[in-house]
Length: 282
Image 1: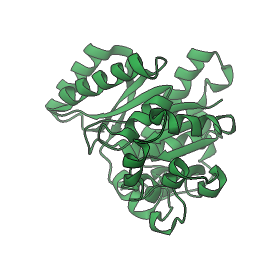
Image 2: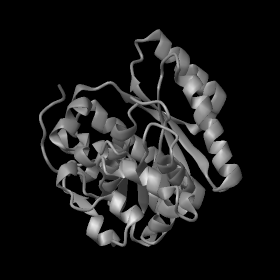
Image 3: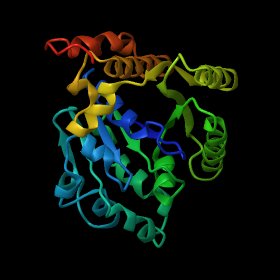
């Protein structure tokens, strides 16, 4: 049965979609079966996975609102080696249509439970707002991964998100937890970055991932090529950081469920992609 993670932050521009794409590819490199759910009407996770959102006859919108099958909508990211439920601007209409549906908070959850046995992990890229789509993601998820940029307003936005998750736990999904806080666009030369990072560690302790995602040119370039950074330049600092994040996530899963086979997955991921040469990092 798949573990389902919602990757969300109500503040935009923190690396949410970048994290969803590159964590999916890094987990896939460890031979895990991965489904990426693009729940953002902007469709950036779809495009960043090498799938043209304007070319999709059927999208997640059709799956949420109409009588279509999962197989009709699902697409394969060849560059990332994971499955995708793609989205585009049509998904905006689902916000309104879901309001008139019985158990509207659980439409996505019911959909994902029907295919959960086919995957090891399901990653949901959420829109940067508290909407019915985001509520559906939180209702479906076992845990929440929160990308956070270490800047002035970070803690204020994080506090609002924590309150939202607490309300969801109280009302519709009592099993949801904060899986981890991920520091993104990290520049250790910046004193504000270090100050905010220290505050996160003080407030949230072990829930903060040890892995940090640095500012990296190759990581920023990869989406324009429709590839995860692991496919675009696996020797870049961005690729190495997301492999480390995948390893850390798998070790946490190992500790939670006692699966000894997951203990060395960072090294397994690195071995899985080391059979090709790439140009050095720029």
